[in-house]
Image (cartoon, rainbow, N blue to C red; front, side, top):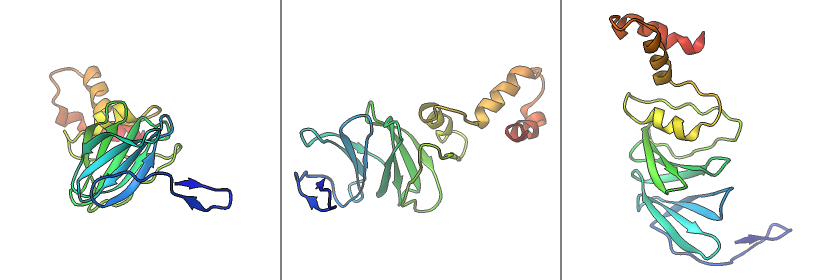
Length: 171
């Protein structure tokens, strides 16, 4: 659709997408739109210059919402039935992390100056997600642990200084 000065919409082109499209995210750095296809379990990438499908990306079960980062490098999909958020690298159109979240995520909203908090179990992809998606200041428990490991004698078990590692970001 195009939007006229008075706010009216004019249909430009109809593009076939997956089953039950529910949400779209438009990139700021290229003419692509990402469509959450809820019943297909995919996010479809459409080129707005020629209205072709660039990629169809499998994500979790029932993606309800997609949102792009301000720089257009990443798209996140909230997968309502699998209780996860999938992180997509827009240069490769591949999911690089799927993070377990609360029950039935159905919306994703954040602005360029918002604080994004990533939580999850060890090995769930938090550090990978933050490595790729966070340009500025970040606090990662694995980074903190690695810094403490480098400074403590090797014979000390981690359990002994774990409370200090967990409090370090708040000091």
